[in-house]
Image (cartoon, rainbow, N blue to C red; front, side, top):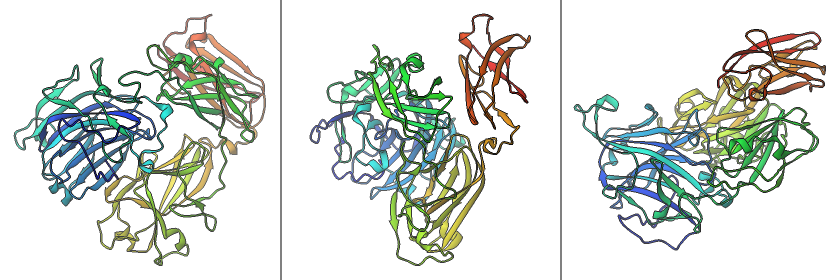
Length: 600
């Protein structure tokens, strides 16, 4: 429960006391027994909404001596899981671990091992984080196993809660407990753990578990028993309004935002959608454009509209018509809705950001990330120092910082970039007091960064990362902590080349045909290509016998990036079965062919 001062906490066993009924209702499931040391494991598909979290943790439910070990999956992220130990004095030791999957799209197995010497966290059987510092020895009180879903009052941590996105559901497939038996076990690190029990959540085992009925300061919901339900062999923890408790959804899906990028508009809805209706082109309108194809993203809440002619210098509205269903049974159906499309506002290179500070001398002011901005932070606290900073003539940048941040994002065109991270240790005066890692995209670029060890106190320290390849038009920088709170003072982004294939530097006779996506695929696939000049093009798909399966004449492709969509289910003349096919793009003076794989 990071960053929360729980001055009044009613989580006594069996308590039914509630601090003033709140506007929202969550759920907590907790063991009757408490455990000291062991391996704790759960298979979870989290809920994904801003302003809330799903958790799996242990907590000492007794004296005022705080002992807690957390796995918290914040609904605002699609690529992050947070680990924490909370020790006496309510001291947090947080690591925000970036992951290469969306925790809300599928089940993953999360675990932690708690021993007298370390706490280690695991995802899908792989150790991803470990704490061994002195505070681990203070985790010596018996702790109950708990899971909950709730909406914190702290927006910088959890994001902005939006009631229209209710209800939220987090799914738990099983929980297992392994006792700590060094030297005699059969499981876990060093085979030092022994399996004692697994609950597969076919029903409420009231000999082992309680459904909580309490709340606490900093929690904007009450926990109620009705919101811990069992469905299809899963425990489902629900966050709802007071009138629709349990695993029920009576709210219609709502179009929240839309944002344009080159050749595409991404629409975000309030909840998960049915794929068939969400990908119905007739239910979307953008005046002055033609929607070529539609793809529902894996999180089921975002819809990509691929558009052949979209002028990024103009303004557009996206209109969705009634007829898009959610996943409820029976489904709730959208009403007509219009939103203004957020158009990209290309930043000038080099992009220079004064993280934690104001705009100054060509540096942009720090700001929080959302769908309408071009850069910003997620989580963290701004701080400043009046001390002089050595080793730089830009000390005003190193005097301001943002610490405890999870990630920083910058929108850029796809291409290659050089990144400079500017840092100064303005607080600690010893080595090994602040240590953190830095990831850019999915790559670890700096391990165990210790600014004081590298440069001393109040001294500029820069880290330069070359040849960052961006394919999704956003640079993602992550700051997982090892010891205490990571920080950054400034960010500078330089452009090395534009476009994944340098499409902006195409010579007059050059073109690019990219690999289709997804590949392999079933149904729709999308092919992206780049041309340096407007000219008619022909697009064909052939089977391995040379028979033409699909053809399309493209009379006026835009200079630069374009998209073609092929739906294999639309072909009626020849059978289109699983297998290899070839797609060809031909112009007046070029032809290129690539393979694609259809799997039905």
